[in-house]
Length: 218
Length: 154
Image (cartoon, rainbow over all chains, first blue to last red):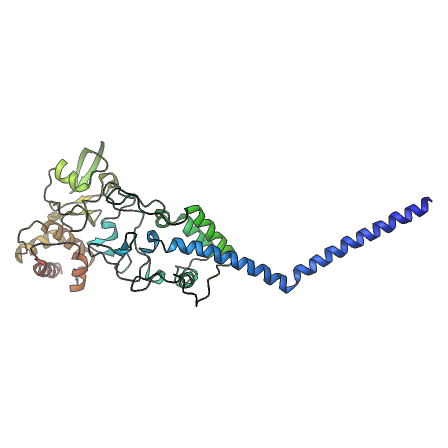
């Protein structure tokens, strides 16, 4: 009776161990199959593209794109009109002698006079223009390509892009844009800065995917 | 109100003003330096131009609280600078001034241009002086005077 019971328990244990081993091996094999890998990659890319669209919504807000022009001048205001007073880009994006950006824009906002300010106020280089010469905003795909092209973006890789969005003074200014001359608050970008940085991180961690070129979403 | 110590034309000045007061009004009302003119008050005309740490700056939009210890040079002090003196002489020689209201700003911008670009082209002059308006339209004589000063500064 006792030996029969032992045999039964041993058999049961053997079956249990075999089953567990089989399940483990099967699961491991499933992870290795290319289809599963592809599904995982597709989901990752989908998340990355969704995050990029959030980033794009900020980059194309007036607080950002007004200084990412393709023209010889910056823009101002939510209607993105040409900067007044014949201000021009200049060779380094900082205006020209006698009419520099910092002739008016100081190191911080001047709320009493309505002039925005931040450290090293200047235009983005033409390689980082996000609109065409007629001031039409580039598509999501086109801006994504520009932002991820290290020959155009001052050599920034993914980690540096996150850092740029997280710490750069003029990026931070967009969420602290100060008062207009009439005393009202300038419009903020559509996301909070924390949401913007989080979306950038998700996009970077997904491999900085860009929408297909033939998409012309504006 | 707050107390600020300013370096104006190489002299130390103390003023007690509201931090939001634009430099223009500190110069004119507190220091009685009325050579710098009020034109538009929104940095659109250039009449209020002074040099702040060597940069031509619209004093009507820069609050005194943002000046820190940067040296300020106004039209009253620009003649002590060799380029400034040469530009002022060229202004007289070419008889640039008509009503004169904008001319202190014009001279301050012209000096900034010539310090950075000693031999400016017509395009350089138009770009750098494009933010200084003159209701008397003395623009042609301003350009002549800048070129003349450039020649003198060889």
